[in-house]
Image (spheres, rainbow, N blue to C red):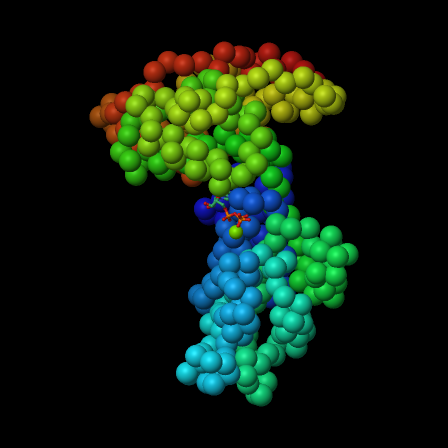
Length: 357
Ligand SMILES: Nc1ncnc2c1ncn2[C@@H]1O[C@H](COP(=O)(O)OP(=O)(O)OP(=O)(O)O)[C@@H](O)[C@H]1O
Ligand SMILES: [Mg+2]
């Protein structure tokens, strides 16, 4: 999970499940819209499992022609079909001692679904054109962004395979349901891209932050990552704008549902904290000043919402230089440490928000 960014309750639930399923040997089914992080999650499960030193072998069932998929997956014997001049092991065997990541499992042909089910039940399979029953110690993690239940109703997916695969099920929430994570991720992607392009970009404009928070993200994390990385390449200023992100400025959104007072309070506080973390790149003193709270109150709030890892701690000023900055979070040090961000403001007081019960 080291590469996975997120602090929202929705993604913390996913992190928790990753740790739990990584400790088992059972198959896992990952569902979620495109770009929500299914492959990254499969890698995280593998990397935390006892198989971590074994191979992680991905295969995309939708990207391989149907006629080749069986041999790709299960291998073939010499002479099994025209062109099979020698015996070849499939991905299932290549993943022995490790994990096979079966992407787009909903596209598997019925005949291959039967073979996969047999492997999951008995741990055995046959290569194409082979008579011998073979065993291999491979864990299967499958993923899909189609509704498998609907596919079962249309007789396109076997119900028994669905239940076998889906004993352990992790659903990756869409980005629009992860609240403040959008900004946290945008911040991380910006810092990574700024470091690789060696550009001195200090953050997002206030309008860009609003646009990031209001866009619907149909392509989820992949779309966010692509937009931010492209914006960093295109930007000629020290601040990423809506234009750089190719996003329209925020439009006023009508309130269409009522929050409880407590939920609204939590949402507003988290949003303010994340905005301030983004604007001030994790600098606690500046955030505290901007939000008009003491550093201890600020730290308590950051801890309460699981955001403390996104702050920067400062070593005592030995030589009064910014080069002594040390990161404590996953954001890493600002690459242009000698350039302090210009004064910007979230323009709100956390104390005022805290009056709400
Ligand atoms: N929590 C996260 N933190 C950081 N990066 C993420 C996170 N989730 C996804 N990504 C990044 O977003 C991109 C898309 O992720 P991934 O390929 O795992 O999605 P997917 O669900 O498999 O998408 P698809 O259904 O289109 O195959 C990748 O570049 C991945 O590194
Ligand atoms: Mg994928």
